[in-house]
Length: 145
Length: 145
DNA sequence: CCGCATCCCTATAGATACTG
DNA sequence: CAGTATCTATAGGGATGCGG
Image (cartoon, rainbow over all chains, first blue to last red; front, side, top):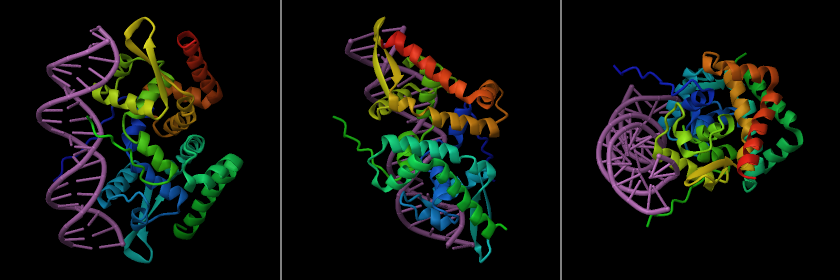
């Protein structure tokens, strides 16, 4: 029987509390995959270029679930697989990602793989945001409906 | 002679690169102190409620400096002290903090210490932002001028 | 004093091997 | 295929040292 780990908050600060939740190198990458790469399965997260380890992925999915940022359901085609998707609370993280990307667009110009995103952010941020939301809603209609 | 640690980037992704820089529980708390609590000295960062350890603080100040997010100068009244302050690159992180705070205002309502910030965010985000910037400029005029 | 640097030790993160 | 178990590496807390 494992000892219940009471997640201790370091202070009453909203930033400190946020960092208690996703202040690490992996948690937000899973959320990124959900937002921008239409990934919804364990093996899809594993296939991202950063190469997250299986135990870390498992742990982060649990933490995101416990925090109410993602939800999950059995894959309709295969009971041994799961589908992960963002809750409303999770989807509300999008503005943070977009601001982060804007900062990156300004100060990490040396990331060639990101130039398309940067251009879209600069030209048509609202369009980008709308498209991310639309993609999610499309997926939801097909898989949660 | 210490071995130079080449900070390895995990991928070409802007989010991954950002997390390589501040994907930990402490780095952004130092930036927070600079933005919202008008802290500019080593001992002031140490006095924050999260109680950062001295070696961690020292390490994070170096990393933030190396990343061009903060700069430093000798304290005018005492050569044994230093003043730390945000560069333009650092100040440009403010929108990320504000989006984070907005998310927290919606989903961490149980942080009584933050209610004032949340209210201000809800009522007058632009005013809040302007005030943070104004406070910084006031400090700069007095200390960097 | 003040800003760190260093050391020691523990806790946690994470890579790899393995299992149901 | 989706995770767990095991092992190792790193982050971090706390005490202390040390130069300016």
